[in-house]
Amino acid sequence: MKINKEGYKIIAVSGLVCLLLWCLVWYLLKQHHTMTTMVISGVVLISLWFFIVAFFREPRRVKIHDSELVFSPCDGRVVVTEVVYEDEYVKEEMMQISIFMSITNIHMNWLPVGGEVEYYKYHPGRFLIAWHPKSSTENERTTTVVRMDNGKRVLFRQVAGMIARRIVSYVKVGDKVNQNDVFGFIKFGSRIDVLVPKESELLVEIGDKVVGSQTPLLRLPKK
Image (cartoon, rainbow, N blue to C red; front, top):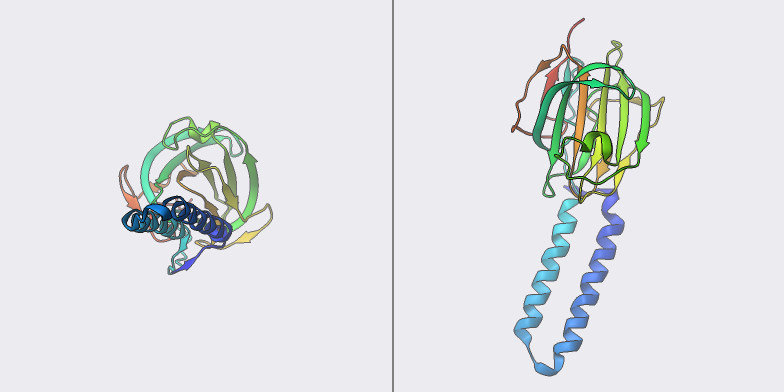
């Protein structure tokens, strides 16, 4: 387990803030000899800092490649499985699976399929609660479409939530990408939508816990 590069600055700044806060507590209370308060405040601040460090943990996972399967792009829980009309790029009915990431989940994002990045767009927007039905179309988000070698297109969105206000994507149009490589990061809780051909076989249900790059969500149609 190592720390993701997206966390370096936040970890350093938050560590400095915690140290300064503890020094302030020490300065204000040193005349009163309240050692217990000093210890408690130190434990609280260190615990808070370790929580921030843990948020940016980067696990080592086996890379799985299977062109028939669409893998989960993140850790979390399935909150939506439905057929919707995708009106941004593909312009057709597609099967959508949405995965909600809590603040305790790993927040790295993996590519659900491999192929060529055909479309990418960043959308500024609101910061509704991530499981709100309108968050997919009104929140700050990115949209990425990968065309697989077999011609099928898979669309996925990183969606910011009420707490998550920083979406990072590493891909651009024209990139050749491999299934289950890391493609981005969302800081502090949000969701990812995955849209595939509607004839795909659903392999998960609402409420299921999924593991990024390890849990297959769907089996793509052969034709």
